[in-house]
Image (cartoon, one colour):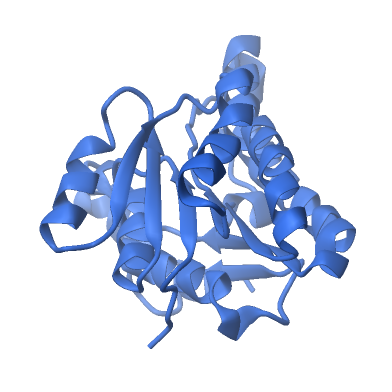
Length: 246
């Protein structure tokens, strides 16, 4: 079993779906988890973890508010003495064919899914450099690797995360900081469950393993990359897509 005892982790978009599963898995492996989300949306997830005797706290954070994102890592270090793991998971979609896409929908997706990761990573690297160690993990998507009609904004942002992580990995490797990407495929979440069964069946037919992924599949991959077992892995894209894209 992976042991993250003594580690402090920050997870954005931690109120539901993949982010909530990641926060839960990291806490179960012993980390103190700061679950970040807008408003009080992360409170339920944190209360659930605390009820199990796990260490977790909620952080109100809108990742598009640069000043707040820049302050968050320093505040965590001031309270806990360190910041070991940062998972940039917060994301949105604003799907539309390019010819009909509004500029504000392009800007919103890039701001939340890409620029926020830059802001968070920049602020998190500072204490990690002093510690001479840390893990930065960005949640991309199979869409950033293979594209998808109607998602030019989302695909651009998720592909950008891959290039960003590969470049940053080279910048900070000498200080023991690893930077990696997890690229989920089609994962069963509230959004996908709301889609008609026929559409889900069509999707599953594109996946060699024959099913949609589970949030725990993604969380387990993140937990591995956050652990000492992955100390020699950096600049890597870990595909969690059931073979949909290789």
